[in-house]
Image 1 (cartoon, helix red, strand yellow):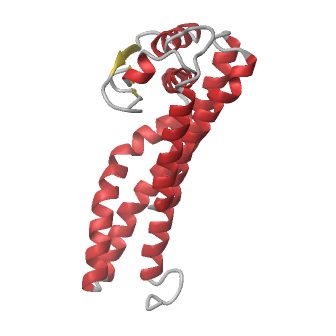
Image 2 (image 1 turned 60 degrees about the vertical axis):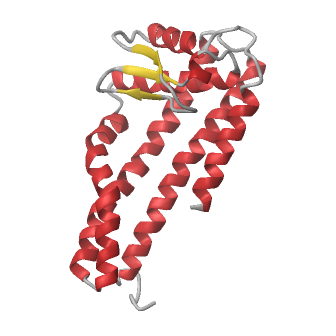
Image 3 (image 1 turned 30 degrees about the horizontal axis):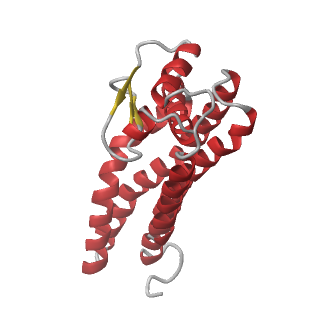
Length: 216
């Protein structure tokens, strides 16, 4: 929990820091996203504004790239970095990027496993029911798998973002570090989620007696 809180605070502080650094080219996040998608030959993807702070995401089912107001309208290095990152997901989808396809396949079981797995494991521990505990472990393992496969998807999107912004000339060479810093901070939230989920799964396995005496 502390790791997740630290990662969340880190990404917010880094975004706020670089949101005060204007991009000298003057692109807004929305303009950058549309231009990157166009230059990569991706068609049929809309770029829209959505409410919330850092609520940016790409919806592969609707083929819509949704950007928060600070990113959609912003002309900062932070806005460009986040917008380009989400455009990277749209490009991944258009090019049938393997890890993204796999993550889309397991997202529903993972969401079910996240909630149901914890409940079943908790009840199993409380009632000392090995069957319920193992059922919870199996369901929760689907969520752990989702968090792990999310890592290469997010890292690849960030890599695509920085490269694309440079290749298209949307940022100058001395602006790369600031843009990359925002994306690295954002990546920490996914790393924290994966580590937290993995630690929780290891705890359940420990209590099930797989990693030692369950009485420990």
